[in-house]
Length: 307
Image 1 (cartoon, helix red, strand yellow):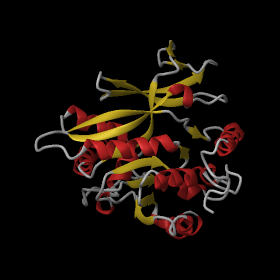
Image 2: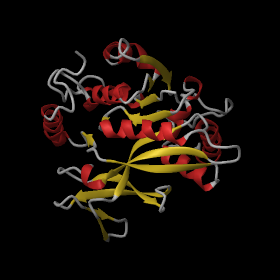
Image 3: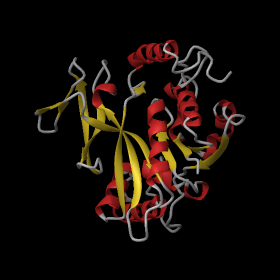
């Protein structure tokens, strides 16, 4: 059973026209999303589902989706502020944005019936991430009755994710001897230390050293459809306890943590030997362009991605 690629792209709606998400980084105008879809197809994925906002469906289909529709099956689902599992819930006054990444994935429940990988639209994950997660699905099989669902997360070395131009936020993973995820600690002010390691400034002002091999989450997850009922239950609880906060969000890592804590799922961290790229700062773009050029020179990608 071939997996599906689920792309969180609802945040792109207000950014068309010079947005970092659609800026070219390849020699023929390729974006970071082009490389993710290309990598997924060659890893055996046969379908891409984009999570977008309804109000920019037409322009997204024209400027993004049309590039892929002749190469892979493409579908669209919509993340909207009032699309919720509780039809009677009324968003608070002043709420202008949907409810976070957990809500985004829940919105795709009716469209996804196979194992799937979730990514951000504006990040570069590398070929190994998609190949490794596809291999995980192929090897893990269906759990027996009463066993927890089996999910996965691509784990990146922190050395492969840092920016030279400012601090970044990363989810530092805690795993057991079987590489099962036991927790993710969100650190919001990590700077490169110059040797691949990082330094995180903690809320109390202290500094924590992070070795170059520290595994971090970059929001690249592998799930089965068994995750959707867990998401719905968690989202309902979130709305009941935090839904009156106009800025609160239901995050994907929180949903996974809830499922693990309840014994309903286990998430295996799959180490990937690839560099994550993102244009966190405008100054990052030349480094990303140079990294893509280097991968083309090495033969990892063709110069003209879709020819």
